[in-house]
Image (cartoon, rainbow, N blue to C red):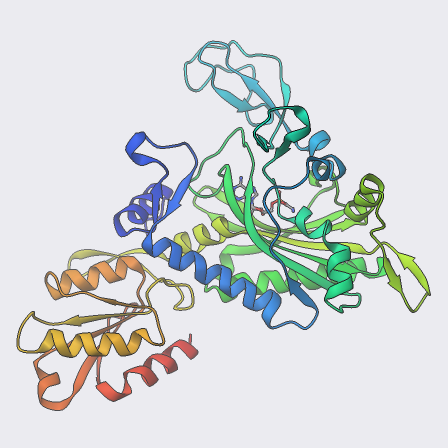
Length: 436
Ligand code: GAP
């Protein structure tokens, strides 16, 4: 049986160069993580698959990329200054900070064992920052806590330039920041993270239809990442869970080792955001509806996913520890679409012209797929390394290659090796990728 735990995933991530602790040489910065050479490739694959699905293959969704820094009035209008709070309590003895609704205040502090709490207080989750050289309140703003507002404040710009008619969407990928009181579970809840958000503008009466449509579409997208469909579900929100702007919402959840947890929210935000910006900016945020010959404020259906949570889901879901010939093999059974390296190339030994032939094959594969060349160590160890990196295919050049121009192609999951002609390597990879 697979042994899955977040600690094992953290350790493999570091060992293979997926994720490193931020500022590690200075003792690390809590709940901030750096993506290493394999991590950045895999993260880019996930982001590209999202962009492909949400923008490139759709006629009625366009993309954009707003600045992280926005006018402070945006956050007043959006309600984040007033409403984006969590109730927190501090331990007066050791100063540890907790979310008040996550702990029992009649019990002692987990960290120091004393029961001496402050009164619960509201804590705004936005990071404040100052713009410019002069520190006065006029230049204060916040690091964006969601990318969505960059879309709303550009609604008019997109309507007048992109020639879209309702219903249509605007999609954006980018960093967001929240000064979370409790973080943890590796990449799951961090203070700096990336979001993939799409705001879909519709006529008011169509809200239910589009909420259902996008919920299903988004669920299918996660399944296309190769995630076990039994561990992923759509859950409607109860009224008490809804965010300040939302009237109905679904969560897409994955069953992590720490329980079912949210990957994405699909929400009916109503006309809240455009109305607020209408009011605060005094610039009309409306759409001219030719059918009714009137200016309307569209309703918004939002699909908001976390890149880091999608990444963690892929890692956790792919992690397998199995016994092979009496030895333990750790393997990431990542979908080839997500895997950081598609194909590794090994010469069996460092002599007899095998490295030169392997190098040539590697260069050719690299023109189409992400590839990795490894010459050092026993062939068994090299296979194990690629298994842990989640590399679905490996080509090995051996002495038979010198005789008949064939190589072995090894499949990561079955470990089966088949002999194929050198000239058929690319077509073989292509066929395998298509069948996955
Ligand atoms: N614009 C709506 C919005 O931001 P949210 O439910 O607060 O909604 C959307 O966030 C998604 O962003 C979440 O489903 C999650 O995947 C990701 N996310 C939110 N806070 C996060 C955090 N502290 N760390 C990592 N990902 C986070």
